[in-house]
Length: 243
Image (cartoon, rainbow, N blue to C red):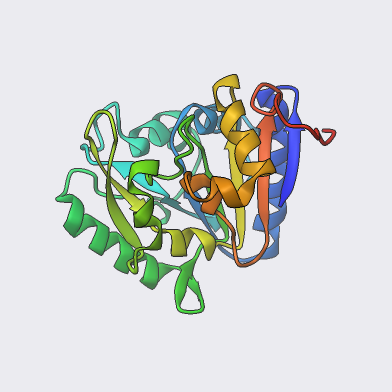
């Protein structure tokens, strides 16, 4: 586990982007699973204003770690957020975008997307493996769309699962734990003081936290787990690595 703390979101966006460019340079094509939420939105805005050619978007295939079961035109859609903040501004080939069809039946879509991942991604021990997996974390300790009340979904044998938001009841399609942990490089991008309590628990008491929080079960087989935190999210950590 690698932990880095940043004074601002811009600092976090810059360093993560530099790391992404290194990874892109190492292969002809890379696969990236995106997350939703406010932190990726800030990152996408940062990418959208980069000088043309700074990132070779033609080498990147985009997927999602989870999606709300709504049409792609709905404001709740992770795909719509990405389109409005990134794809509308950068030259990503249409054939490089593999969205989760949130408008479809959740169970059928989980099966379809799981098969798509098996066909499009390289595998690790027969499990689809992303080059880069971006994850967020909720203030309840959930990640992707696996929530604490459904933590058993983490161990699903499928590549994707159907999940339910604990408050709204909204259905979601999410990667399963085995696909998450098969990724080569996993980046938790976590910002905001409301995340500080769970960040402290998961980083400082990982085994205890793993009994309660899906985010604590993120333990990639590669060992390449990066926590990129802003200062408010890291405020309760006893040990604070420098930026």
